[in-house]
Length: 247
Image (cartoon, rainbow, N blue to C red; front, side, top):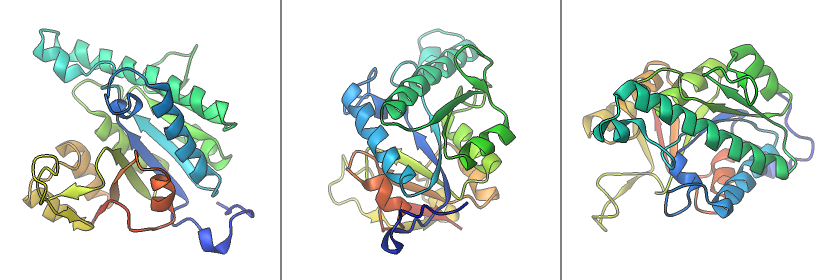
């Protein structure tokens, strides 16, 4: 991929193709519920900043702000049905993000692992890669298309399928800590950590299936705070933001 001719040598991106993992709660702002237009707009602005650097961006988005399958099963909904409901919630979020990005003048495509041809393309790996090469932002909705798998697993799967160089896991905290920074003000942030260390210390970077996939395929993960302005751009430019998990 050619870097943008408009990009100053001082601001050359560290990555050429990335997968951004967004939780559904991120679209709900600080409350984490429903879809907050201001939070959605701020998120879209950060994505535009990295597209302007010439970086190819794919997004996997969760649906926890609308419905979470595991929570539904605890309230009596059959687990597989609850997970499919959660997948549909991710499609709603994908369409909302698409709308916000297109209002900023960005070309996008939504691909769904669940067939719904009237509102989204089916997920086809080669087509997704082609969209990225043409400068379009590809938003993957519907998780993996299977119950019992999280959108973290979908992110790990899609990142490997499209040849992304890194998974950027956006959260509400600025990295991975040795304990809960909300409960422990003395908690220390890890600037870098290996897969093995994260497993040994039982740090909840991703669910075990997603994390194992990243570790087996040597896919680095950067956990960072998306709520800080320009943080996504800083990560792309190689600045020491958040926590990097690698081998």
